[in-house]
Length: 61
Image (cartoon, rainbow, N blue to C red; front, top):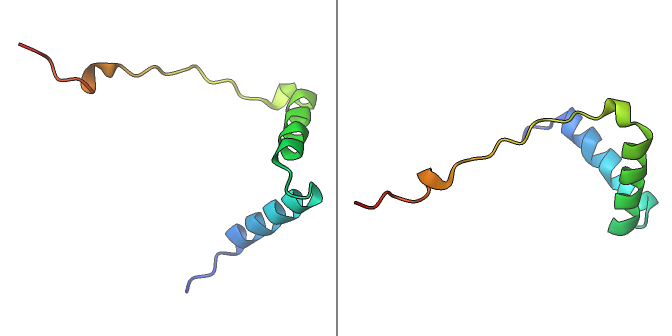
């Protein structure tokens, strides 16, 4: 099987990060939120692209 070293490193880091918070999702979320607030200049804000629902509903004649 193909071994991807980059993905292995990402998975290792993610595991270590989650383990440092005892896998508590609330604690992980709070930490990420604090990092986001601390580095607002790094955030990328993209415009919201709204999709039309017309393609989901066939037209009635």
